[in-house]
Image 1 (cartoon, one colour):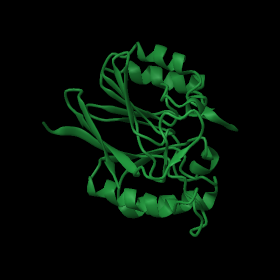
Image 2 (tube, rainbow, N blue to C red):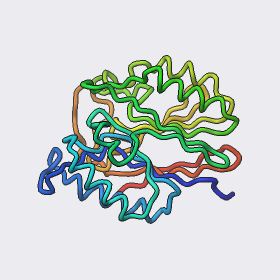
Image 3 (cartoon, helix red, strand yellow):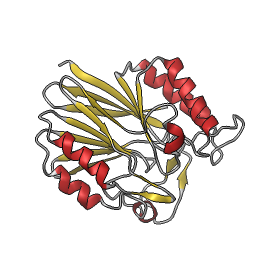
Amino acid sequence: MTSSWRLVQLTDLHLLADDQALFKGVDSRRQFLQGLDLATSLAPDYLLLTGDLAQDEKAETYQWLVEQLQASGLKWLWLPGNHDAPELMQNWAEPGFWQQGPIWQLLGLDSRQPGKASGYLPEAQLLRLDQALMQPRPLLLALHHHPLAVGSRWMDAIALENADAFWQRLQLARSPVVVVCGHVHQTQTWQHQGVKVYSTPSTALQFAPGKDEFMLDYQAAAGLRCLDLYADGQCRTWVENF
């Protein structure tokens, strides 16, 4: 079975403008470049970057990131996370996307809230979702914040705040929907209302799962998610660690 599209998701890069600086003890630039090399080897049709790209929210950080992406030769799309500055991102590319393919469509929703770590989809974003759900073709939907609980009290306190409105919209789907998110720095899989939802490891470092308080897991590997989208509406996805 030949895939209609191959996508690779990289998320939670937490890059810094200072090439000597570390993110919580980790060289996030080096980690990202390893992830980008692996992504390139998988030959995706699109690279999806799902937020928390620039930890310091500086123009120089986005400039460095875009230079690496352009050098890779990959087509890429990006979303902002709570550690991003969309007003800077749009100097290079719009932070959000809606791509129509021959079989599937790709929709990236901006769930960032200014000044808050939790997410929210304003009416304009929900209307974009409505429009995509009206299309008679499968939908790969990306956003930064997780729309379902991950089982960590501190992390679930900064999830998508209006997840109920999000799921009410998805009840109207005419075709299969697959959701990918970032933000949680770990791999999880859910199924809700017939929709598969996947979170993806950070390229930088991971959060310890199932903890009520913030805790890092320096033993957990960084990773990316590969998704093969097929003409019959099926999706095959897996995480590759590095």
